Length: 168
View 1 (spheres, rainbow, N blue to C red):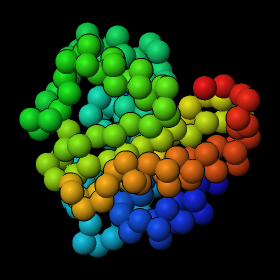
View 2: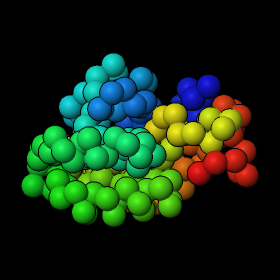
View 3: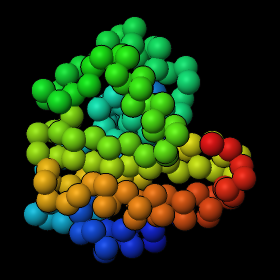
């Protein structure tokens, strides 16, 4: 269902485009399209990403009420100087994500890599996945990429049965 939308997003932006789902306490990348010269990433298809410092992870974490407290109890790893590890700050970011449906991450997981992600919803309005674009820092305006990523996410969600009057 997601592949045609991912292909369009990749064609338009020529950056990493990835789809992730929540599995346990991480975001697992289930599909990715990449240019050979794109910024290096820490995980491939089938690999996991931390929820607190990846854009797809923040989207998934924002929509799973019980998981945040369990992660706070365990503590957050700091991958770069920009990684958000303060629970209060992260709580504010997740609230913004629930409100807007998007998360933006700037070099929190990998130096030189920024990302914007949006939620994918099913027919009941549940967030079932997250779609993101990952770019080399400074190469693309993430705020300019948000509308394309959100539009793709909404298209996938509609194909899964979501309608604007259900959930979220």
